Length: 297
Image 1: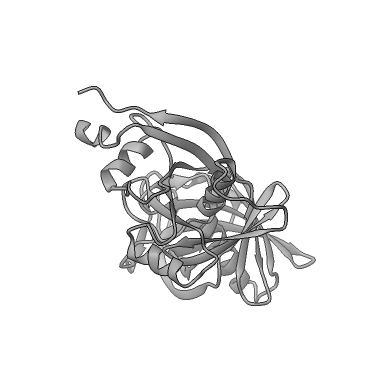
Image 2: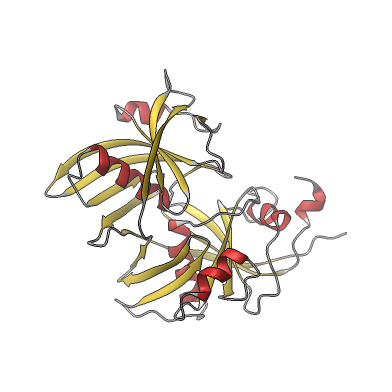
């Protein structure tokens, strides 16, 4: 990043939030006049020269995002009030983020941009369509919709002795899920470099490495680490947790519809409802607020 990019954003308020350690910079754009740019996103997300985060989220009224996919999603849902304009830390646009949409709703609530009573729901426009978020006490639960299983790929990663098969899962954004034999294999992975995929997906993919656990009383358990495209290894990935659960469910012969996912940043729950929609439940917190400062020329 150049010094020019470090100065690519002007002064203004922001918040920092996370869901199980997956962290985001959040900014409000109530009149749709301050679109994000790759330079601004990289500057805000930089952990040394900026605020730092796995991604940047702009809260903008639906229909004013200036983004074809976001505005199209909002057009078909009259109840949608806000659009989540989500970007990866490297300045690339992303379709959706399961942890991000929960943190986004928490941000709306704390900024008094929306109200959500316990048990109530709110619809959010994303590039992967409209997502419904329900408040369940201290937790937020997001309906991430359906999922699609794809073809196997070969996945090579530092720390693995040989390439392993990975199952493609689409949850609105692309994932490859790789089952490992033990927690030792999971621990010994080095995910500083992106795993190599064969074939290479046209739009890239997040890669989840999982160790399936026991299934008891219709509830399964999984331990997971993830390398996110455009970011690197993160402490958690919400849509990745869904992908991991649905891949493991497929491998186990649909033995469970509820899954507990342990990630380095905490615990998430994935549940498949009667419509075939995957619900992601977990914490979402705003940890601080501040104001960015224009750099001195």
